[in-house]
Length: 316
Length: 316
Image (tube, rainbow over all chains, first blue to last red; front, top):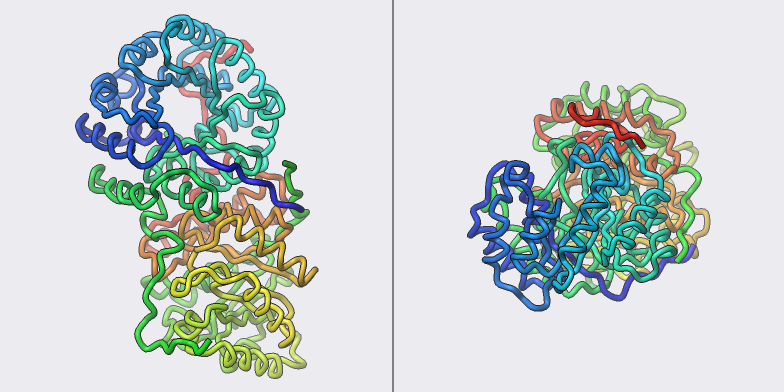
């Protein structure tokens, strides 16, 4: 069995201030959000999902979306993204000058109804309205397929159904696709097949993988995707985020652990890992709780330790 | 890029009562150790590393090795193993009727001196003395190569050096080999190469992979090994274990998370996952602290949730 080739470069897309913070027990003050995003802007990540323009009633932690989006310093090398659940959110994100809008619906009808309060057709109508509203604006439009690897209500989603929905996203005028493992149900074999199936059908359409580490498989799923050529990954500093169905479970794939794995495998990301680790190690102070990230605790594989006293060095 | 084939069956080898307990802050009473091993004996795992016949001064938590080894119920379908650091430990393990002895040294000279207080040649002499002492006894002899994927003092270990040491193990009369990532430094690319190199050189010599999740890569490393045909894995219930150089970091690969990943990928292990999860969920009570295992918290990917009230079922 021969080893697959890894991509020549992997884009790291930071989602901590959106997916990470939305589920936190307390509101992180706007100034601290901006400071965190500004610091992340200089780490070498390709994209930052800044916030979500969502109803403050639905996600109180992100009620300051517009202030945050307007308050951050913009590094021209970074694409600044906002999640938008509907036309009103999209308009606000465009007004705030976001580089990219991330539109989302679930491939599972039940999850879409529960999460977005819309049928699939209503969601797709909403996408088309956003495409229309964004005409003439330079912002890119990415479409996320939530529950692409399984729905907590319906279970597994057939690959054909996921790819058919991706097709409808592209027909509606979106530019790129994210396959999201919303509640951490993906396994590596499934990931390999879905990424290969996506590539076979959509060629070079930019594809992002968004994994959660809910059942410990986050990095294994990333590896399986890499082996099929995937080169864009969402991840969350410290592994913040989580899943309402899995209290106590870990959140998104940990940015610094993913970058560390890629670096150890010799796959370049352009990310300054020591700087990222510094930021991750600051999160417990900022948020008042421990974080799931492992490399922030253990150090990098290459961080060697002094030989304990009394050990005779070998002659070799 | 084509997907590698996975093995037809994977052997799960439980190490919680050895690698897991040795680093615990307090001594688990002998009766509770025996009860845990007896329960694990009925889960379908292939091997159980029962204990280590080591100096009680070095590892006080395992001072009851002989009592535990003699007190457990023996399921004929399970291979009961003891770790032995030297001839004296080996003799005690043979006297206790263990099915297999696990001999260990580090491929890193510095680590071997620090951990075993022996030079490599002294360790190999010890191995030969154990082979001699075990003559006529049906016990199998496995040799573990510690720090096979990196040493916390010396750093990376060349693949040729690891394979040359495996060769010397086999020449000394050992029957099977474990490649151990003692302090969690392995990455998937390295794992794939080393397993492929081992297979190319030693064919069907039984090979176990022993991973730690210190830097979050435990399951990704297992996946990389699987893709090269590896079919024997050590793992620790709940992810107990750890690394003295990484306080707060996770321990061994989590048995139930590994079994869950394999099951989700359709790779049979013969392990009763629900029963294993029950045992894992009992560990926090037994030990007085939380465990790193994720599936014990989140449930299996296939454990569906009721649809929240007020959600209209889609017409499809």
